[in-house]
Image (cartoon, rainbow, N blue to C red; front, side, top):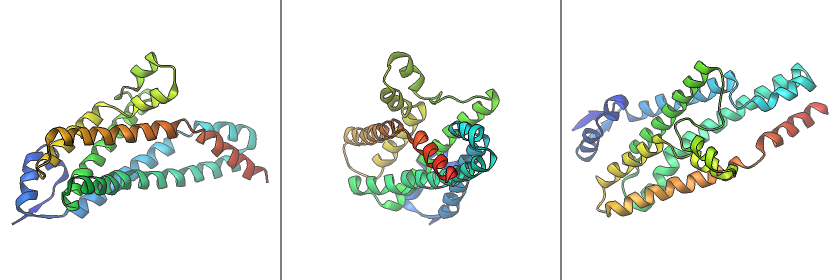
Length: 229
């Protein structure tokens, strides 16, 4: 038996997808992977062209002129493309492989799960970007996360960055992953839940730690140094 994979149809009917994966052969999955990937790449590039996360280049334009600024924007665009590919590949291939090692579930089934995870993450970014477009301003934390609340309670940037990675979409992803994995393994549901939560906490900790690095300052020094030669 063969069934056609439809991203939006099965997003709202995960149980039907789970049943089909357990009893039939899937078709047109790779096409949907490319569609999600292209949407994600377009989203990241659009955000970059709109000016998100490029405010550190303003001083370069003010003090070095148009040519170094244009070069810096080009380098920044290439960097965001590479980051988009890495970001989506990690959540799609990397986490699927990790879950395969932990649970023993077929990698092909976990790839389907993680495609929805990538889709939900991109949906969160798209909604946030839409809000930024409407307001004409950006914030360093996600409006859907615990970041804004953490910023009112904690003074340390690490804690703010950490809680910024935990959002209502994170809860949705955890629920989706737990439900999906439970359907294809005999592992204790509590163990599955603890494993999934631990993975998300570790990723949040790593992201928060990277957020403390003065990447913008390093980048500005690199570009300014190159422009001055």
